[in-house]
Image (cartoon, rainbow, N blue to C red; front, side):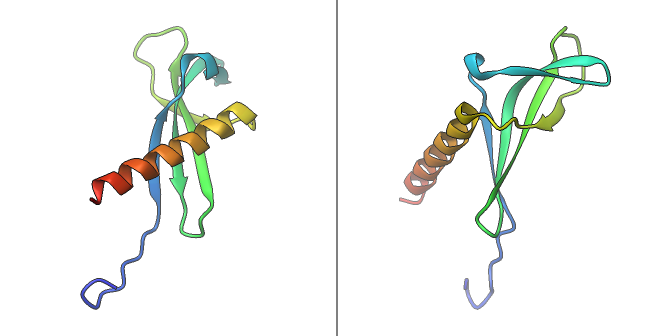
Length: 95
């Protein structure tokens, strides 16, 4: 409660750069994309949801497009490390 008002948080989000050695490619509508970032959301029930974002591998001014995050242990570890780092930053900001 904040001054008698119930505060409801719907989601928290982290934007994470995928290190070069963990990046991958995927294809949408015949165009290859290199996935470079993740957006990870902490949902109200404590679960997480993640999307990967990338740009066309061939370059140019193509749209930044979202893709599913593959179930790979190294990407799961990246998400966990990003969440831990975000928690450290959040705690330090509250001091």
